[in-house]
Length: 113
Length: 115
Image (tube, rainbow over all chains, first blue to last red; front, side, top):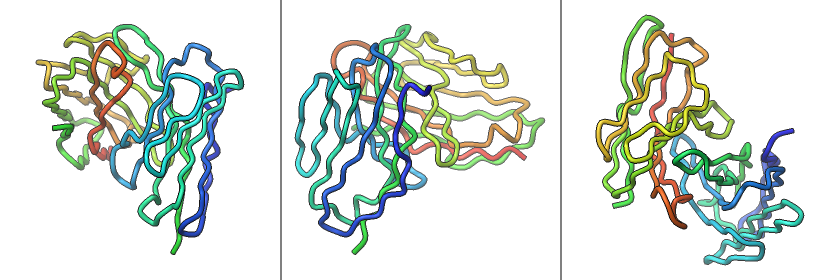
């Protein structure tokens, strides 16, 4: 069983739709939960992070964590064509002298006009 | 400045070549990372440097040799690679301790092709 599971998509939605992206995890040692956005042929860009169960909102993005169910979500409101990218969930644990990120497989999102 | 730069952007090398990838950051971060990303796959951690010392090696083959000459620079030396090593190599940096340490800033990557 993978430590982090994420539906790879692809997911295609019309402009203005609400998008829901989800990940599940099995490792209770994960402390921080993040969402990265990666455009084609670019490095991942941190979108949002949280470390506790509950919701965190930033503009059109809402990150949700349920530690009891080991489930995290990212909601995108009023989706735009510029949101078309691969969205990676990532989970962090302290290992050695650094922070080890374990990524989900990524969900490819296309927002169509 | 929240930028991590990587050079070269693209690299084609033969299996007998020796080459190096370079990464630089000026954010004062003391943790730096190398990741490998194959097409349509997530990044996979290779190495972590903390205060210029290697702290994590994720059982990476010895044909990959990391080096951290100072707090701003990270190199990855490549030797006798295989075609299956072709991938996007990403560098990242972060704080070492405290709440922001999970916040890793990624460079654009070096796209490596081994022929």
